[in-house]
Image (cartoon, rainbow, N blue to C red):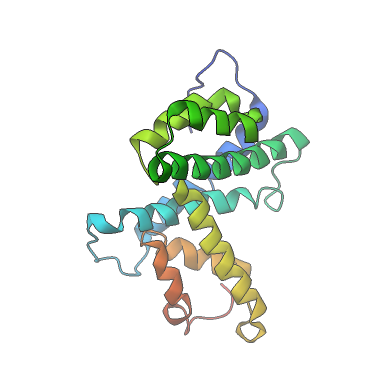
Length: 198
């Protein structure tokens, strides 16, 4: 994996977070597994489902960041701090996206809101506000997708009759993650005949 830092220095404590999100089990791994999936492989999806597909892809990557400790990463407290910072940053981006696109905020209003509620992220504020202005709703896909995945996981865990196995759950998600996020509404039907564990 190659990463080009924007500054002359780069805090290596964020590599764990970056690798989880972009590498394995994040985007790279997800795209490799999804490419081999035989679930709805031939379906040609139109542009109207772009948000749904992006919500699954970015939601998966945001979700797996929370698995860092279980996967043996984030041993350094500063590494875990980056995961928490990005969770906060994503929440801030959602608020700013709504402010700009639904409430007509100016740059000054967006910056004031950002600095009041998330001063720790001042270093990326301008970049993120410009991104939000160019690409409405994209930043929301991370939070929405992660929420839908965690919601399904909690539902499956609560249903003691299904013999929930997290490995099977993750494999199933990867197999359908090339589809729009609303396919999670049909998770039980898609995988009702499989074995409980891999």
